[in-house]
Structures are given as C-alpha cells and as structure tokens.
Length: 342
Image 1 (cartoon, rainbow, N blue to C red):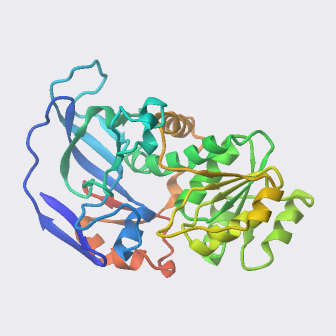
Image 2 (cartoon, helix red, strand yellow):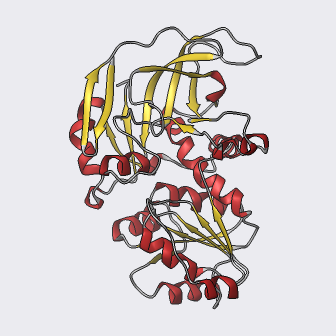
Image 3 (cartoon, rainbow, N blue to C red):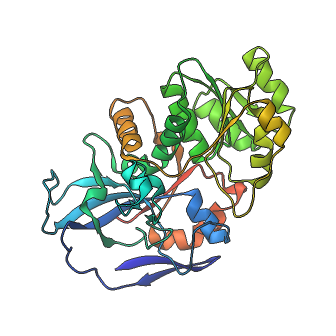
C-alpha cells in the first residue's frame, strides 16, 4: 500500500509497505481518505518539532472509513463503511492527568504522526474509541476537525466570556481556529499577524472585523479597537520564540496569556511585568472529547464555513513534490489536504 514516510528533516518519501493485519480486540482497520497537513507536519519536515523522532509516518488530522472492526469489550455504534474523524491522542487512562479528565496531557501521551506513526498511508489500525462519527459532515471537514479542536480547547482553557476581548497572535490554521471559537463563545476576536497575505485572507475571505498588522505599533492598534484597554485574554499561536516573548506585553492587568504554540527551547519574560499585571499564564495542549464535540456540533449547525480554509490539495504522488514548497510563506498555504481516495 502507499505510505509516505518522513525519513529525516527535508526527506519525504512515497514507498510501498505491507497491508496491516486484521484488527485486534477493540481496534478497527480504517482506510484513510483525507489527511489535513498541520503545522506539526511542516515543523517536523523542517526539523523543528518538539517530541519528534525520525523516521516517522506523519498525519494526525484524519478522515477515515471503517473497513473492519475487531471483537469489542464495550458497546458501540460503529459499523463497517462509517466515515469518521479521528481523535489522534493515545493516552494511558491511568495517570494523574487521565484520572482528572485531562487525557490530552497524559504523562505518556502518544500522538499519531508525532510520537507514533500516523495516517499518511492507505490503511492502518487504531483503537475504536479514537473514532468520531458525525452525520452531515463532509470528508474534507472531518479531516479538519482535529485542527479546530485545538483552537476550541484553547478557548475552553481560557474560559472566554461573552463580550470579552481576546487577541489571537498568528493567523495560521490554529490561530484561525482559536479566533473562530472565541467568536462562537461570544467574545470579541482581534487577530494579529505579520503576513499581508494572511491578513488579507482574514479580512476579505473570512470577513473578520478586527485584523491588525503586527509590524505597525500593534498596541496602539489594539487600543484603538478596545477604547484604550489591552485584551483580557491573549492567545499566542505562532510557535515563534520572539512572538511568544513579546506576547506578555499585550495582556491586560488581571488578564490571561494562553500559549497554544510551542517551541524547542525556553521562554523568558519580565517578572515585574508579569506580577504587576497579576497575569495568568496557561499552556494549551491538544484537545479533549468535550472540545471535539463542540467542533462537530458547530460544523453540523453550519456555524463554521470551512470551504475557504482549504487552499491546497494533493495526491500522495503530488505531495512529495509539493510539500517542500508548502513550508514557505510564499506558498500561501492556509490548509492543505492530502487525498488518498481520488
């Protein structure tokens, strides 16, 4: 079967591998139909991804179809032929995080396509409880659910309230997802980036009301929108060290900073600034079932239009040639999709 392997940074290969064996107990065999290309994949290609080893089969934003179901020890509603999204986080269910309902930061978390091989292959096996069936959602949309869930989780972490002003730094897919769920929470989203192309996309395609250029006195631009205040919540979604350092400056007194992106290395900040503003600093990792359910419900209710997000598409053969270009800003990628069924 066709399998795409990232052998080492900068070296992506399309190879033939053996078909997987029949599913074990509480497992399913699935056929991959779509794979969303994530910032994690791009960073891994560039050699800048945390928690990553090579070689690796990438792919954790997945739309799959069930081909076989193993024997099960619990009741379920799945059937062969079902089209599903995937929760790509494999947790132990026993550690302190899992016991507290935070399986997204399990002490031994394995993420498909990062810590263990993912879905850039025609078929593979995975635990049945990692599937999500969602009627009325297209194959493309199912492949984007996980990306949206990361933004939804960040917003749930921050507890954005009706009318609160939230600054989202970074207009990549995760930043856009975060902004989307700020708005669905009733908050007022301000999205900031340095890329003219992404800023234009936010204004003209997504019709976002408040979009600012980080290159031109961003604090004054923010205050012009908020009648002089800084945002109560700031989401940093760039995965850029300099931006993460600077993000502390944008948080209102008594406000929250949520680091959605992450880097290889340390983050430092001014302790007087941090304490004077009695700031709350949060990390946000992956997503929970609650976040996935919020995403699926929002798509089903047509609260999110995902069609404009998909800017690039490729077959496995095409992706080997095109992927190296997708990592460059000039490519203008918002969301790229790998298709195995076309």
